[in-house]
Length: 297
Image (cartoon, rainbow, N blue to C red; front, side, top):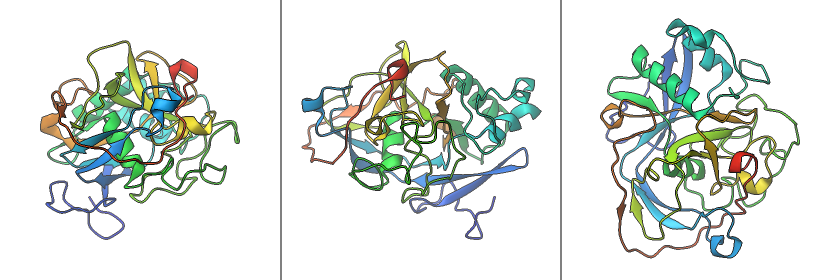
């Protein structure tokens, strides 16, 4: 595996830096994952007690393990590249067709099967496995150290993301500037599934949270091409039934320690989140509204 700097950092290097690239080849298609280091951040919206929109109460979260997040949503080219291992991936389910467009019209369950197929294919770097990001990992990676509503500030414009039907459909990945860790399309374009079952946030600090017990809906993040700006904020949460599909819903892969992956993707062996009693500060975030399928469109 190589990267644009000449060589890929080892997945188990003691000191990869935030945003370091890891190139992975899947059936001759090279994709890039970006390193997200362990850390502590304020997750949620400090104004939630006043807004009472969708339970994004701000709380302190500590992630004890680093992970590698795909720098873009899964594209249609990447989705169909799996046809070598499963014939079903010969068909492109997306409504808005294009190799470099995000795959959409896929359910959480479809994406879980895809991730499981990836892991069976043996293309993951040694010691790592593919999964969904947890909701906490997704927001941590999206913020990339920022405390504003979006990773570039408190206002969202058509020059910075595909949202609010300013384009009217999905756009090619990397059409807009990435965040500080090299991640694209974290605001708008397509909503992205996470591993967590939807659950109210705790008010106390937590460590390595993985969401609630089994329920009817999974969390999705980031908003989409037809979302209100508030639904695209770093703190905004959406939810989808596991069988729901839509032209504005896709997903993003994470690579993590293979020993933490259970047989079914989305069930990381992180255990119950540890809680404590620590004061949390205030980080600026914006509205978190819900729309289609109880999510930010």
